[in-house]
Every structure is written in C-alpha cells, then in structure tokens.
Length: 417
Ligand SMILES: [Ca+2]
Image (cartoon, rainbow, N blue to C red; front, side):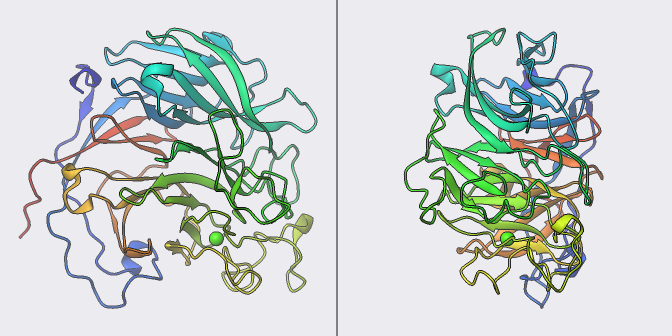
C-alpha cells in the first residue's frame, strides 16, 4: 500500500500500547474478571499515519481489493481515493459524478455507511446508507446500490434497495431531528448485507414488528429478506435482530462469522452484542410508569436498572451483551475485528471506536463472544467515527475532526521492561 502514502503524509513515531489490566481502569467492563489479568504479551505497537485530512464529517470507509479507498462525508456524499492519490466524488451533492438531489444532512444523518459488494472486483457495485427527502413527509433513510466503472470515475444505475427506514423527521422533547439514524452497513461472510438502524427517539420503534428503526436488517444485494433471518411471526422478514437503540457498529467474528453490533447507550451502558438471528436486543424505551418520560420516550429517564439497554425483566431471552459501559455512555460507534498475524496478540480481537470517550478499545472475547479483557490502545484522543481494516491489513480510522488515519501494527513485538 505504498501508493496510499504520498510524500505529504505525516507519520508519528512508533507508539507503545497502553494496557488496562483492571476492568475498571478501562472505563467499565462489568463482565471482566475481578482479579487482574496477566499482562498481555506479544501485543503490537501501532504507527499512526494521517492519510487524509480536511474532510467534512467523514462517516465510513471501505476498501476495494486493489486498495482504492471509498469514504463518505455526511453532508456531501461518497468519494473514492485511488491508490495513486487521485480522487473522485462519485455520488452525492452537486459536483458528484452522479448527483443525489434527495440527499440532505441533518443531525446525525446524511450520507452514512458504505459497503462494497462481495463480488465488487467483477460487478463494481457499491452500497450506501443515506437520508433522503424523496418522500418529504416523513423523510426516510435508505440503502442505495450503485454501479461504478472500472476507473472509479462514474456511478450509475442507482437502485434504492431498502427504502422506508425510519428517520427522525422533527425535533421532540429529547432531541433534534435527524437523531438516532443508525447507518452502518456491512456485508457478512454469508454474502448478505447487514444494516444497522436507530430508534429515532421514538419509543415504539425498537420493539415494533414492521417499522425498520431500532433494528439490524439482513438483506440480499437486491434488498430482499435474506434467508434465515428468523424474526418472530408478524415481523418484517428483513429484520435480523430488533430491540436496538442506535446501531453504528457492525462486525463479523473471524472463524465463526457471527455478527456483532455496537451501539450507543443513553446516559449509561453502551453495548457490544453478539447477534443471533431473530434475537431481541432488549431495548424498549416505552411505557415505564415509574419514570417521567418527556415525549413518552423513556430512553434518557432512567438508570441501568430502571431503563436498561438490555431489559431481561421484560425480555428474558434477550441477547446478552459482550461488553458495556455501565458507568456512562461514551458514544460507542464503529467496530471491526482485527484479522491477521500482524495483529499479534490482538488477532481476532474486536476494535471498538468511542466518540464521546475519545478512545479506541480493543476487546478480547471468549468462545461465546463475551468480553474477557478490554484494553485502550495508545492512540490520540479523537471521536472515532469509522473503523475499517484495509486491504493492506492496517486499521483505518475516520475521526469527526475530518481526518483518516492508518494504524499499522508493528512487525516486531513490543519490548517491555
Ligand atoms: Ca441490548
């Protein structure tokens, strides 16, 4: 990937990795052992390189097999940066190769996730999640499929494969319009597209059988329900899991292929959750008589006990989280598994980006997908908005400050005293 490194790039010196050996020191992992873990050995050192800057709210990153990097900017659209450093605005506002006149950005919404077709090398298909005013009342989120040419200069054949994903169309008592749209999209190793959506500050969405907010959807490349979703009777067949708050992280565990979600908590309990087809994430911010709920949305009104992110009282079979921040919500967003021997001890661990908390957490999971250890990588404080492992094996990060970083693991083990 030397072509990704033009002379103007800034590189930091090799950065040692800090480890949190006690769960509480890591900002909360209530499932970690009480006793200190033994030190992690053979952890990688990270070298950080700023590969892009000056972007406008970059939201997601995807790589083509040849190393071309796609990225979204929330208010303008989808762009590609080729390995020679040249770039094209492919899809979005005026000036794009294909203009989306219906794209708008508001609150947390706009051009969000991007994913490349598993057969991209041959079919040149790319998918984005965006807010749209094609239907003006209410506006919606949708997933759009595009066709690119071989040189990444044109986008065509726009096909809106999933429409009608709930969008928060107006301010309410707990926040502004455009909030809690979800927006991450990822293809699983099963070849189906997983779509994370949000609750829109609408109390009925997460547990609603047919409205598509507060869900993880799983669809074909044409937007049809994927086989095996197994939702309860009466549910939309595209729903893979429900009872979510705001899913902005989706990742697939190497080896098993199991999907994991990462989502924001309200004022507590960000969660990472191993997903099972038809499962209920247990978020239900409606009808809490003991709480005072502005706008009937109880999501911010309670505590981990009275308004849990996973309500086992109401839903005894709910999906158990792997990891959470019970002490606070720190804006957990993107997630990706680290894959390959270059990650040394972290090979197969889950990297999770924290926005409000401005940190990058690396989580070890047991065979059941439950966290056994969480360490903070020694990287600069930033709002970690996107995490994607590149075709070169490095971890790419988009920050809300408008930068894209490459975090390259060392080839040599860390030297420790
Ligand atoms: Ca949950």
